[in-house]
Image (cartoon, rainbow, N blue to C red; front, side):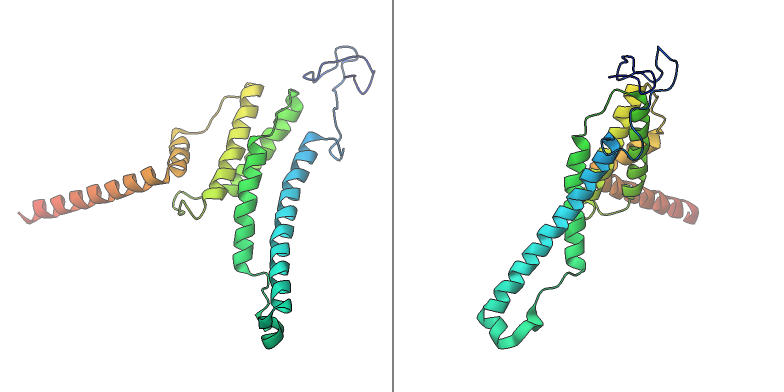
Length: 207
C-alpha cells in the first residue's frame, strides 16, 4: 500500500509515514471500503434478512389459509400478523447469527483500525450485556452475542498491547453467566448457608 499524501510505499500496520512524517489515513469514516462500515453493514443485513424470512413464512401461511377451506369459510379473520412473539423470535435469531459474525471477524493489523474496532466492540458489549440475575435460557443468545463482542475487544487489546483492566469480580460474573447451572448452584448454596447462619444466631441469642 502507499501513503495517501506522498504516495510512497508504507506497511499496513504503519500509522505515520516514514517518508513524509504525516499520519496515514487508510479510510475516511464514510468510505464504503472501510472494514468497520462493511462489518456494521453485515450485521444490519443479518437483521434485515432474518426479518424478511419470518415475514415470508407468515405470508406463506396466510396464503395457505386464504386458498384453503378455512379461509373460504371464515374469511381473513384468521390471518397471522406480525406480533410480539415474532419480534422475540427475530431478536433471538439475530443475536445468534450476529454472534457468529462477530466471532468470525478477522482483525486488521493497523493500530488505528484496531482502536476503532475495540471501541465498537466495547460499546456493543455494554449494549448487549446481560444482567447477572437474568434467566440463562431466556437470554442465552443475547449473552452469546455480548461475549462475542467482549472476546473481540480483548483480541484487539492484545494486538494493541493494552492490558486488560477488567476487575476480578467482572471476570467471575462473566464466567458464571456463561455457566448458568453453576451460577444457580452457588446462589442456592449461599442462600442455605445464610439461612443456617441466621438460625444459628437466633438459637445463640435465645439461650
